Structures are given as C-alpha cells and as structure tokens.
Length: 556
Image 1 (cartoon, rainbow, N blue to C red):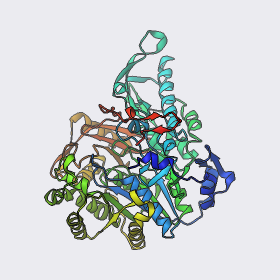
Image 2 (image 1 turned 90 degrees about the vertical axis):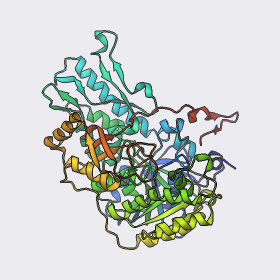
Image 3 (image 1 turned 30 degrees about the horizontal axis):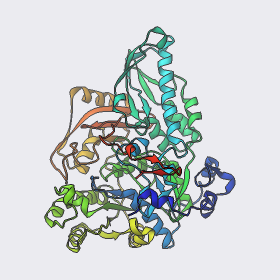
Image 4 (image 1 turned 30 degrees about the vertical axis):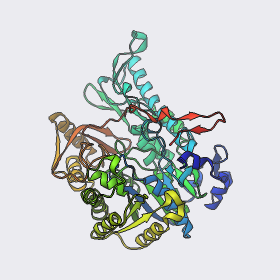
C-alpha cells in the first residue's frame, strides 16, 4: 500500500495560476511561492466585499483516538466531491504545525487520495507564516525585556509578566526557564517559558483579524504583564505593535494551493483546538465564501473543542454562519471508545461498538441541539467494518434525527465522497437554527460552566481560590463580555485523557486563566494540558529523511 507522501509525489499538479483562474483571481493579484503555491493580495480580498456569500460547511469529528478518524481527509474528500457534483467549492484548512509533524502526527495535509498538495511544503515551512508569527511574538518579548533593562519606565513588575516566548517545535525543556543570566549586561534575571507557536496570542489575533488595521489594533491591545500597582502593560505601551504588524503584513495574505484533483484550497492560520482556538483564518474563510458556492472548513479535534470554538469564538466574532456540519467517525475509533484494545479493532465487536457510540451521540447532540447546525455522520470505511457494525451505527444515529453516510474518499478521492456531498447539499439548503453555547453578557464563570455542563456532560466546574480570584478580577476589569477559549485534552469529554466514551457527572477543574486582550478571549486551562507539548518516545522525526534522489520520505 502506497504511503500518503508517495501518493502526493505522484500527483499531477497544475500551476497555481491555473488554480487561481478557476476562482477568477487575476494573476496580477497573486504572489507565487514557486509554481504550486501562492498568496493573493489583501487588495483583492477587499475588492470582494460586495459579492454574495456561498454556503459554509463545517467538518468536525468524534473525540480523537489512536485508531484515527480522518477529519482533514474528509474535509478534502468532501470538497473534491462537491466540485465533482457541480458545486463550485473551496476548501479552507489550518496550516500544520511543525511540532506535531516531527512529533506525533507526522503530517496534516489529509491522507490517501484526499490530500492537499504540495504535501511536503504544506507540512514543513510552507510560505513562512508560522515563522513570521513566531518572530512577531518574540520581538514583543525582546522589547519587553529590553524596556526593563533600560530603566523600566513603565514600572513593569518582573514577577507579573505574562508574555511568553514561542518556538514551532515540541520541546518540553523550554516550558519553564530562567532567562537573563550572566550579569548586568544581560538584563534582569526572571522566570520565563516558551509556548508552541500555535498557542501564541499572536496566532489567535492573526486568525481573527479582518484587515491589516484590525491586526495592528489587536496587537497593540496585547497585555504583556502588570505594574507593581497591577495596572496592565500593553504592546502599545512598549511601542512594539507597529513593527509586529510589519512582520505579519505578508503572512496575513491567504495561501492558495490545490487538492490531488486540482481543486482550490486556502490553507491559512493555525491549529491546536485543544490549546488554542484552532480554526482557519477569518480572512481566508470569508474570501472563500465570496469566490465559491460552497466552502468546506474544519475545526480542530472533536466537536466539543474545535466546533465549540468555531461557533463561540470564530462565528461570534466574524458573523460567519455554517449551513451544515459533517461529523467524522470510524467504526474502529468507536470500538476504541467502547474499551477495545488497539490490536483488536479489526474484529467485529458489537458490544464495544454499542458502548463507544455514546461518544458519537453526544457530539451529534452538541452540534444539532447546542450549536443548531444540521449534521450528517460521515463514516470513513475500513475493509474490516462489518455490515452488522455499520447497521448498528446507522440505527443509533437515525434515532437522533441524522443520517449516516459511508465515505471512501481515502481510497477513491472525490468519487468516494459523492454520497456525502449530496447529503451535505441537502442539509445546507434546509433551514437551521444556529445558536451559541453562551451569551456575551454571561459571566466568565457562567460561560465556562455552560460549556462544561452542556458540551462535556460535566456536573460543574471548580477552581482554586487563587484562580477564582483571577477570574473575578478579569470580570471586574471589564473583560467579562469576552468569549472563553478552553484548553483541555482532546481525547475525552473529561479532563482525563484516559477516560473514553461519554463520561458524565465529572468536575472540570480550571487550573489557570490567561487574558488574551488582543484576541479578545479568555483562555481557561483545564486539567493536565500543556501549551508547550513534548515529543513522544519515538518521534515521527526519526522516520523523516531525504533519499538519494532528493525526495522527502517518511513524512506520513
């Protein structure tokens, strides 16, 4: 069986100018990065303002498992299928982060015959967006420490600095460090730490900004720390936001690539909905809606994390409204949620499937009842799936008022997802009652409570007195109207990654809160989750190499 990278390397790519032409993007507005990828200008983006919007389709999934679900693969396959049935469609994806590429995942451009290409470029440096975001973040960090070194005119309390440095790599050694050692010439020693780039507030701002002007305003609002009197100090106070904007001005332009079937895809903005908001950029998504009949986008991880943030942060802030949703699952993953060992997933086990289906059912209920989006369940079919297992899933989902579609785009490309495409069109053309999980006027505590009880099935939330005081202070300081961004394990509805299925009655503990004043949300860190992940014992990097012909191998 061919690997994903082997399939991608055999692809017959069209020049990016030809892909742009399919959408009517004039060549003079393209900024090519080689022959097969390009950015398009923000002037062109602005020129689209008066065009009508197409329909937005969200792809999400059950709680992820080591058995795999195939959410990005489905996003690509569905986009190809919609184009095959005559619907002009653009795919909007998040850019992969290098940490997981070299760590656990090994790649994030889809799989099999449903991929975006050039796959190696997308999974590696691509067009340099993440590098620009890291530089902007670390420029602010450098200017902050420089200000303190040169007299600290703003009176910043070095014990109350909240701004971290970032690097786009999983590196646990950098989570907590002491900087500025080596004497007076190196500044004032203090505790510091690194996050991975995608967890940076700059990434969130980048994804939510609607223009260069909006980007600059948001960057200026970033709170980097506090004075001795606990007055917030911003990037604007440090006069850093202008230079940060300069570093990001080109990165803000959306990236255009193609699928294996030569359909257009916008890949822009950063992932990780377990520790950040995990969506494609607002600029890219809105541009796609002006250029296509249908736009297929995904939100990171399951519908409890990615889809919730897509709804409560991205849609709330941007005015975007999805017309339909596809929830991705595999029978293998559902059996895993039912307690089956990874080595036994190819054996029919209706009892385990019965138990594991509760995970899918909760995700379906969340999407239809709490987000108000009509949905279809897309089952990525494996040869080991039995008719009895398929029928059980179909029956259980039908009882919730949704249909199940078997999809084979991994093996067959867009042709294998045509049934899914037809169902998505049917749903998108029917009325819906889109809704948020909480309202702007709810308190921060109530917002977190509603997400935990409605979406996670929890009995309630808890926090230490210190964290509760921080939340109360943020509320009192005028940030209570902000949405919340929950950082939590993606593997469970609870905060314990080992709890499968659909646990109920548990307590969600808020371990830490962070103000993201530029992104305009409050990060709630719950349970044992790291904003700087580590590498596994055997990282994917061990298999990635360059062969004697100069071809990348081992990249998924």
